[in-house]
Length: 230
Length: 230
DNA sequence: AAGAAACGAGAGCACTGCTCTTGACGAACG
DNA sequence: CGTTCGTCAAGAGCAGTGCTCTCGTTTCTT
Image (cartoon, rainbow over all chains, first blue to last red; front, top):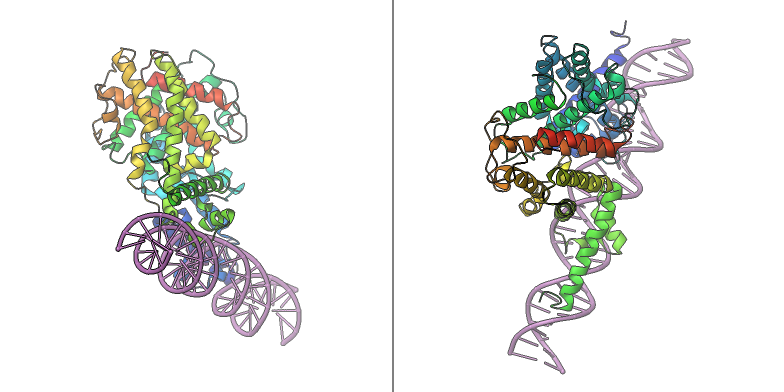
């Protein structure tokens, strides 16, 4: 039904895709700040103002790339995690971690776009929040499953107060899991992205050599803090 | 001796300081990408080209701000950590963590400059690496002291290979500490900055409410992974 | 076939970092 | 004291940016 309404809409969809493809390539080489609408237009053989027929502003083009990035990362995590045996929770966790790291290392600029410092003046629209929770949802599912099958021991203390039960937050993504376990999961989550941030943004240059092994070791430690038996 | 050589040098130093001050204010409001030499010059009542007498390029001005940021953060950590009893290692660690977080929350754009995604096209010169290790040096000292007084239990495994013994790296900053403990310290380090990154870059908006308490809880968990007795 | 909507091209505005030249001022030297 | 040399602010200008507006043309709808 949505295959080809008119020729005009087909070529419009085609051009829109070509614009985002070229923009993604530019993003990969120049970074977010170097993404130039005029350069995209130049590469397409169009005039810069024509781009505005497809994306009303540079920020809208950025938003499209951000949504694509969230989905690509989320899909990578989902695939890696779902390839593991359902009851191997530590294995699923490690697979998810490696998926995040490898995608980030392979697409550093896209990763910076979604998990780095926010682009100045850019405000993420509501369209992005649906795609943004895909990776953390997959990861919450592991914690959820592990808790339900008793693979996570109940911790001693209750943890601090103050988990906001907002849509798409941890509290909603892990129903039935006690707050203390959610807090441990949050800690492991921040450890994961802290590591990936440091590696992608160059803090490990000339410091850590065998990064994959070191990462796996750190993620095993994170799983332990989460209470996940190895 | 360096107080006042000539009047010319005095006014030059004064103007240089004024430029960095205005640039820092602009950085705080607009972010790194919005830092404009012309706007700085406008605010000083000068013409844009005059700025180039003091900073040969925009990147050099950025570098000055980055070095200042490293020093400010490092000094905050040093002060907070040194205010604790020398043998209260967990207390020193928590104090250092809170210092990092509070400085970052108070100066989000400066923090983004030094620990966020790298500014596109900007390459950090060698001048920065001296100041950059100030915070991690203070923090390594805690681990070192704790290890020497036996507050850190020797871990089971040895951890992965691949610690690069580069100048200013962890391996050099913690002499005498076994590799396995250094790896645990690296994990705690990444957990710390992972948390601060997420908070400063807005990932905790509408998710975590009482962030200071949650942070302290996460940092206690990190201290536990590090093997630090509480 | 006629009207409406979408489209690409082009000119133009305000802004950016940066370079080059010009003229003025101040400090050191003979 | 006067000259010379280095430093400085100012201005014009270049190439680039995001974005807006207008103007014919093409395409779809009625």
